[in-house]
Figure (cartoon, rainbow, N blue to C red):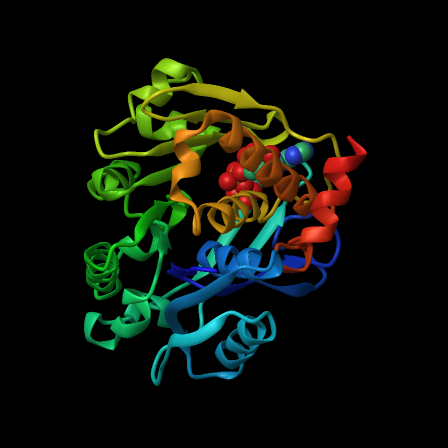
Length: 319
Ligand code: ATP
């Protein structure tokens, strides 16, 4: 099957060993490897697809640990660079008892932000059938220029461009800057996935309806998806729009659900771009992606919770 190249950050989340505490109260932390683009690459390979990750890690124990996780999961690692000076990015994350997520990032700068355009593995990027990315890699130079170059090279080589902004407001200088930069590459994507929260943020509207989603439409876009957590997802194409319900599961940790959803979608799309034009087949694929997202919420962490194909079939058949 065709290659999906996922570009951006990979890092370690440190999550408290007990739930419902503030970062200061946490008695200890567990390492949870993540970073949305890395999660997407692993989501793809776990489902049987072919994926590569492009990004930079620190030349430290954590960086090599993360590269090892990608390799163990059959993700092609030829696009990974190691920075000699900066550390692998870390984030301390907790879900407080009031339900709010609290983040503390160690990126001052971290290795992922230091990827240079001239360090890109262009041969690998040119072999992509789908090139996937987020917006965290747009925040600072030189990674921003590397991101823009990689997109250009992938597109010139005929790849489908897939964009999941994955808004992390605390990483941006201001909300205005985040919105402006996220939208600055909007019109280049063939496929865009946003969450309900991102839709509200980007449109400035407090409604998650068709009109606000369509205000994000651009003429070259082929598919826009709005994920709605336990409510499933909405889809928009040039010719049709609709909704696909989620699966009912006992969600314990939603981390990575969106990445699992995207990985599943890209897996199906990579060898058959035309399914976007067939509403019946697209709905089948979105059911599959919803099932992947749902399964991912039933286990702690992102990467350990990404499903393999047989698990997805079993929840789909159980319904
Ligand atoms: P992330 O938490 O990774 O940032 P996201 O906000 O990008 O996720 P979500 O909308 O939370 O994306 O989830 C993606 C998909 O996963 C949803 O469209 C849905 O199909 C499935 N999903 C997420 N949460 C649940 C849930 N609680 N129950 C069932 N399915 C879910």
